[in-house]
Image 1 (cartoon, rainbow, N blue to C red):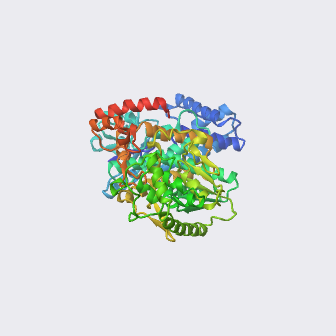
Image 2 (cartoon, helix red, strand yellow; image 1 turned 60 degrees about the horizontal axis):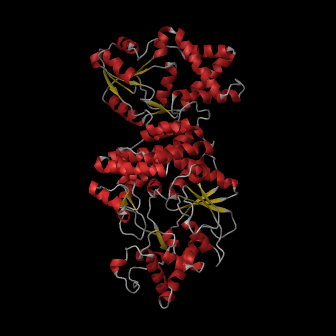
Length: 635
């Protein structure tokens, strides 16, 4: 015989906690004039009524009807009003309940083997109602049994509900295996009776999901819905190794909430500014566009949302060429590192092009000094190199302009762009390219993260989500943007150029499976959230600190398995540089000490907290360094 607990074992709420139903119910009742209590005050009254009813009920197990008798007496309701409120609570509960995917599969396999299924639950809800939910979720079949504490006047906690089930089914304890999430009610209690019992905690909120929920009464239900949706998205993880599981989980409960809140903010802010079309810029904008498409289906926005292939590599040199500032594309005064390979990429030159005098092929990836950058610029801008270069840039500019015109850019319709960030370089390049000499075309861009400063600021509005609500120290911590870029990876390669259609780099083999997996987890979170929230946008000012804080907590305090799962993913620092980097490469203590002593040898986006989480003597050294950096640059 197999038995299962019901709530948080086979059924899970799209809310963080059972008590979160109460303020939602209170808001509904207040809207129809059934109570003048605020949602938080109603939630307290509902809980007190449950406590009073339980105090006088046989075995302390009150029914929902008895609870509402107490509540109606406290609020001055008549019988009809109490019945209406009780029915609404059941409706809200049912609206937020879903079957746990793994348990649905397990129970289906048990049935195929001829096993009988018994459900037990400590609850005030009627068995007939719970059975209806189990049927709806494909968890009930003819011959199943359900025992609930309020009707049996017995509980799992003290073992009496198991005694009732044993007696009524005629089963012996040694033939019974129970599964549930509560260590006391689902494990210790049945084992005392001689039953076998297995603890199954999958549906419990994780630490990161609890951070989304927060503490106290959630009057609006937004935070609770977000945490509940993150949990159910996590439970939807497909089979895979531990790294894939962790990447799915983190995408669901860290990246998903952040990206949903950011995309909703973009849509709302764009509408306020009179924008009619949003261009989601490749590659980071792909997941934001897919979230926006989900929001459009629920009526959040009627904005025209499109995907636009752009990249720093494709536009590099063209804007500067348009504005007679080609020297800047070569010397890159705002870049810490500039190489001959990057210069050739910016100028749309292949490797067959001759190198400046005094340089050899071995120098192509070597960082150039300021004097070397200036000398290289002098050489490229002098004939005959400049004449050949002008022809190449003119051709690329024509192809780029044709693509942008085909996507509707260049007209008078108010548009804006959506991107991850970080320095506004791509925005400045596009503005320079679309403008006239001496007069860039000001554009509005929305960024997830945006660094402050830099000599080349965009002409138009550059609106950063982090900056608007909780700025992150992006500049001194390059691993922060790198982590966000890993979360927002697209399922295609980087744009190289237009010929005339977009020419993309082939996607790295490691991304072919990883990117769809991460995006699926994020979109699962979005869809579950929208199932219960519909077209009601989340309050940006309330949710932004929560979702940004969730990302910051992950970035600064990852555990070891998270550091392994994300720190060993390959990350491209610059498309012109050879190979890819890991945020937490395998390093010995000696290598870590060397990196601290020689800054130039450090990985460009070294995830220090992740390296510290990996442990060992090297991890201890990095941990100390992280604490010092956090004191200087708190998140």
